Amino acid sequence: MIDVQNLTKRYGKHTTVDGLTFTVRSGSVTGFLGPNGAGKSTTMRMMLGLTRPEAGSARIDGRSYDELTCPARHVGALLETSAPHRGLTVARHLLWLSRSNRIPRGRIGEVLEQVGLTGAARRRIGALSLGMAQRLGLAAALLGDPPVLVLDEPVNGLDAEGIRWLRELLRSMAAEGRTVLVSSHLMTEMSMVADHLIVISRGQLLAETSMSDFVQRHGRTYVRVRTPELARLTSALGRQGASLRLAPDGSLEVDGVPAATISRLAAAAGLPLDELSSHTDSLEDAFLKLIGDGGSATHV
Image (tube, rainbow, N blue to C red; front, side):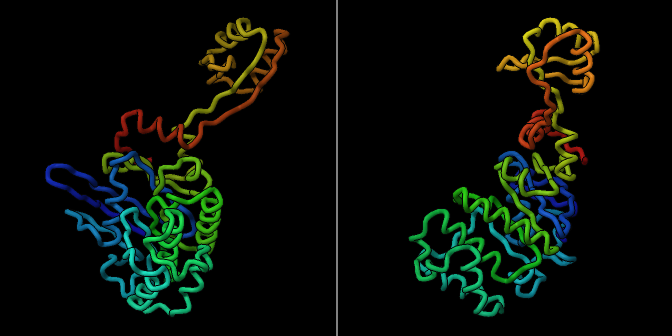
């Protein structure tokens, strides 16, 4: 697992990461969320020994990254700032990585096939499209068949087919018992792949919880109602203490009264209902609500 304890990083007077503590466990995909400038990339760089913290520690299975022998065999990493030599071919870049980490050369062909780059092995990195370059970064992360993956915005540049492929890959690796930490600003995609969430803002922890608990706690559950007798229904629901909101499409959004109660109330009053459906906010809605509420550091 990945264990982050009281991690702190400052640049001059600005504190980018402020006493951050969390754990990423094996067997699940953990989403790492936060607004721009929250400190996600800096935290990942400290995990990988690329940035030195002022205080605290980041350990992978009990060891810091610089204590790992042949680190690519323990941690597969993809950072947004990764920049392999553009003059190398795809295969030569992976060969260099395999030699420096004592990885069998046969793994190169395996990961190229896994990421769909077998036909591009002899192409120079500078000639790759953005999507192909991203697949190469993923190939490098997978090269050592590592038990831990740390991926920063891994879907950047991938088309719809590539995004689905990556989603299935991450889910399968977590199912194998690996530790998978993924940072992404694409909330819809994160809601489809992550089991667990770590949310930070201003370098501090806001939430460390399951996906379902996060949405339930910070999202909104409501009932959508459509009726030609809107005024009568609104009056009846108001007497029940419901919180009401008229949506732009003309439907009524009801908080505080369950759908079954609304159905019985409408039937008793002889009110026709064209729609009665329960809804829960999306991950994006819940995330924006948490950040919009001030983003105070509260562990949940």
